[in-house]
Length: 56
Image 1 (cartoon, rainbow, N blue to C red):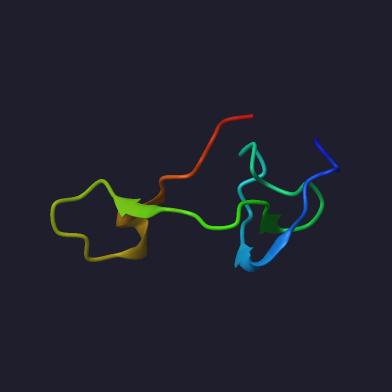
Image 2 (cartoon, rainbow, N blue to C red):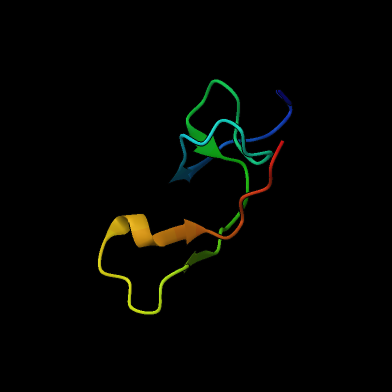
């Protein structure tokens, strides 16, 4: 866990195994993120993805 990361309070995140996650705070440390989809015609929130995810 890198405690030097600054939480971006505009981007909530609970994905703790992402390198951009802010440890104990449930926020992302990036200035912005890219949201995409793995579906041709997304109809549910499960069809969307954070394309900024980076495995720790």
